[in-house]
Length: 388
Image (cartoon, rainbow, N blue to C red; front, side, top):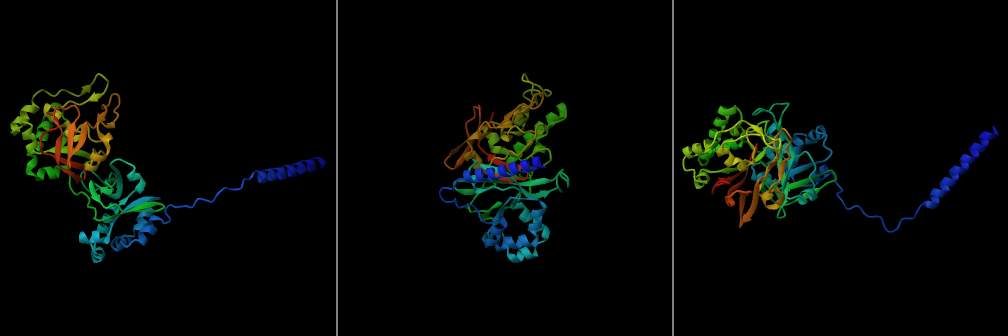
């Protein structure tokens, strides 16, 4: 019993001594506390504080709060067109009221990004970053309810302007505690067509389409694969990519005056079977015509489709010097070799120039830039081919 009392007394003394020691060790703070100067409102509170009445009416109509909650989004980004932007697009409060829930749902989901893109982030990068919107589809091409197509938004800053999908807008950002709102002067329109639709609808690309058809027929006859025309159509096999599409005039300036000239170039040498190179990489073989055109589509082909998003807009070409010779994929032994962006970009006046690294062809001007499709972005070349 006495032993227990001794133990209890020692424990009590130790506790008191520790408490005194901790009290004596405390140091009085020096100076004044630093005031918090960051965002004070959530992204929803920010939205409520804006005068974007049409957007907020659309939000309420489809109960966007429940959609955000179902997506379990702790932080996200809103692209919010102003009332003036909606009116310019022919969308009024009455129009929102009469629109189907499905159409309003599509509109808002396309303008909602599934991750937080703070202003400091896009100001700190060179070019654009690709971000998934909440809008998906499974009712076209080879997509379905299990494997859905996702619409991307490409966002960045160029010359102090907000860049969306290669187009400039006034930079107006509202920062919240769990997200950012970018106020837009224009309603964003999702791509409704593929590259192949655009090319087939224009008389300026008959040489290009015939070149693809000739190449594809040779591959089918030789080893039953390939097919670049398939790459021009949205499918689950290929992520969005960039295509520098040459016009008929571009082919003619490179010396191909007739379709028969294309056939003769394609038959310049026989296409061998795919094989391993001396470094152990599995490589596909191409026609002499296709080899000339590879740089126009970043070396992606029907046999080697884009395995992740590689979309390059005009602001990327101007602001991101690391694009030149950028490694798209490191490759793997017994698999495909490393893949690079074999292009240099420059600017002459207001015209963006592009040149294949190592080619004897000089830099060529881009006639048209930033044509957005479901399967990527297209730029038009009219003054020649990148390689001959």
